[in-house]
Length: 466
Image (tube, rainbow, N blue to C red; front, top):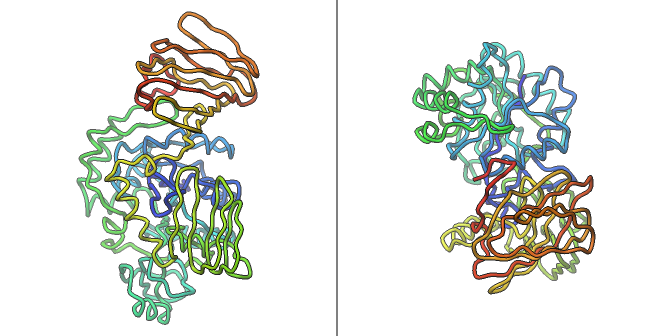
């Protein structure tokens, strides 16, 4: 059995915590590990589970690799989608790759950004689904509902309380319809998790969407290996129709089977669902970070950077990050998508990046910025190096705060220790490297007429970036 982790989402419904360049699956929302890491580690203890196949977009590739390394896990393949084409093609890429050597493994399809509280119950559901998948069924896991919920799609099963053929998939219902589904007992929330043979999925997809299979096969045939990643061919994959696995296959196939799952599942798809998933205090509040409340109930309050105080409010969501604050009534928190759309229209950076940005070599935090200057705190991982580069429009001053810096400046190479500094003139070809075994921390002061990240001419790069 090969886990296939689909990690292409942007998670904009949890803005401002989740953003395009670091979406929710890579955030540590519950404890120290990210949702992506939790998705993988909750498979520990299952027998006959191979290393995973990860399908993600190009921008997240180094984050995927770094988070895998942090939990000491290797992927069979990390397949990079050159553009978003929804879940059906993403799963097709993994299935075609899994079939390459004449094998026909079971594929356990998991979203990278879900939460499951009861790992043992999750394992039991997988074990229950395995013989059905081995017989050629396309198994979907239906979450047993314990409350009326209008935010999920539903699966109607032929039978209650046991694995059953799927009667139909239904869209998100209104309140009255959701109440009738809960009362009926044979309706389940659609979890978006599946188990099937790689060949069974491709056979059904070929039947219903042959163009999708053709495009995905071509994208892999023309793919290139880049470090630890498989880059699907951009031109071929762009020709692929965009569709979800539900619409493309599951709603059409006669082989769909649903296995009930009662394991404390949540897709963490909104601020309200995040509030529901957290342990709450005696007033129904969830507080994260440096937060003080007075006469507040049923609220989610999250602080990343500073003291946040809330008084006399109920049913609110308050989220503070380094560069944005969002305040919403819980009933309207889903409308954050409207804010994100407006930010996109205005080409605001806050929709894509945090103030702290992650790179394959480490991270930088834009501490302050003015008309002709910018101050960054830069952290370089042990053994890592920035690209050999040059800037047309800015000069840089570097001060080492901790660790050891190897600085290349034109033809000169120097080592700098704590409290030592250097100057990189405009137009100088330079590189920063950490030759030590502990993180390197520096303060960088940029000055010049243009300070954006696209003022970088790379001559050499360890990570094959343009």
